[in-house]
Amino acid sequence: MERLNSLASWREFAQATRDAHRRVALVATMGALHEGHASLVRRARQNGDVVMLTSFVNPRQFSDVADLSRYPHTPDADVDLARQNGVDAFITPTLKEMWPDYPADTLTTVSVRTLGDVLEGVGRPGHFDGVASVVAKLLVVSGPCRAYFGEKDYQQLVVVRRMAHDLSFDVDVVGCATQRDATGLALSSRNARLSSAGRERATSLSRALRAARESTAPASARRTLMREVMVAAGVEVAYADIVDPDTLAPRTDADPRPARALVAGVVEGVRLIDNDAIELE
Image 1 (cartoon, rainbow, N blue to C red):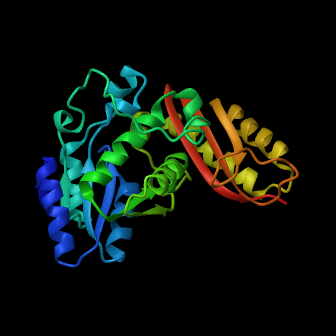
Image 2 (cartoon, one colour; image 1 turned 120 degrees about the vertical axis):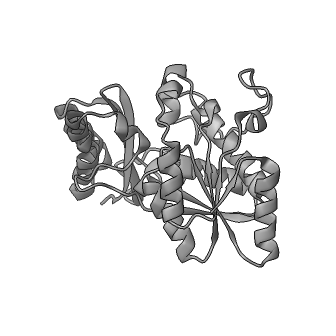
């Protein structure tokens, strides 16, 4: 596994891969790697891709400085996980190269309007501008590739797909299934900040989604059901919604097409999200 930390070496590795008639795979992470990230790498390798995994904590997607400071860092474990799962290039770009003006504002921003303003965008203003901007830069440096993103961050996946479409990036954005532990809790780097009791309360997010999926009630009633499951577990609910999978517009009771249920809540000061596909009748 190669260790790269400059944009120049990253570009060179990607181009050399294409020159060898191999497909480049990008797995973009903020470190604190877990089985969810490993599953993205394995998916890429199953497709025969050469895997470049980036580890960069992007400050531009944190509106809360305290939240940024609490983000977990496990660099040694990250390298081990990457190597064990067959990553070809482990890339740790420097903050100076990624955002030379930081902590001053970067003048150029990529904003995916509407899609980035709802759900997570309400409670975290500017978050998806930061996400879209950093992913755009990762794609520019990587060049033509497949980019693998987990469905656990479903809104992020929708935003990235739309950005890649609108800006004509030569990239195939691949969504990969959410990975869960034995209790149903979606794997997340933020889970490390939860106590045992907190993890138990956090399972109410996946239980809320299951209740919505198994219900035959209209969309409005399922929204209420999800919220009730989370509140009963002592979760501070940020939202519980059922939306169009592509536009993220709320589904109405008269709109029985396939939908996506998304929930978010705060447990022990940690903001958690989850989602699942559901069918409305």
